[in-house]
Image (cartoon, rainbow, N blue to C red; front, side, top):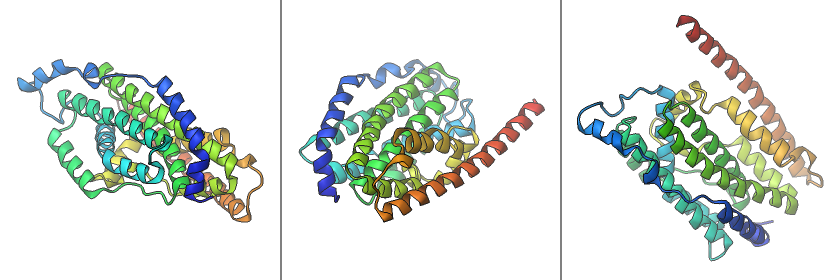
Length: 304
């Protein structure tokens, strides 16, 4: 199936999933979740931006998560190009954009009044990120659906894990709001991919293989992204183990049951075999990474 066929055949499902999303979506207001009283401490010289107590990994996670949300115009361009138009697809892209816009608003205000990251660093990063327009560019509508199904789940988990490390009820609440939104976005795409597998199993498997093996988070255009990603992984917020155990394995084997799909073309069978070998390799890397993290944590605990 080409893009035109895919979008035409899946539009009824997209409409159903959009209606479900609108029925379950939560209306909330960023200003109601920001601890504005903290701004007085900044005004009175109580602390300096970027020096509030926070682990390096959590600070990197906040910066990366915010700057990722800031790049919204280019994600919207990509999604509109793949799925847009005067249809359920266009209505979904517009609703998604409106909801994601809240995330950057509430995160920036929370981070700023709490003094967690220098706002000049955030603005310099935003300018560099948005000016470069570096975003994932899936090859097709099929690739796009598969990518965002994985990415939205990864973002949900990253937001939630960041919130748990802030040691701040206000920050935790902010990140849980974002995580809930991202989960609903994930469910839209997850179930869309399920329907796509029914319609075109071979095309779906080939797209999934490309997107799983080539997956990269959307923040790759952020200045210093590799260093931030290492800090985030070191803090246990998002790493190979999490990616394998909480994203790839549940989606591929439980939700989409790729191992049970029948009637594949020869090319799709090869893609599935390659996908499973890749997942096995990721599992081995994840285990080694988890072991090293446990050793570091044990060493730190012993030194206290």
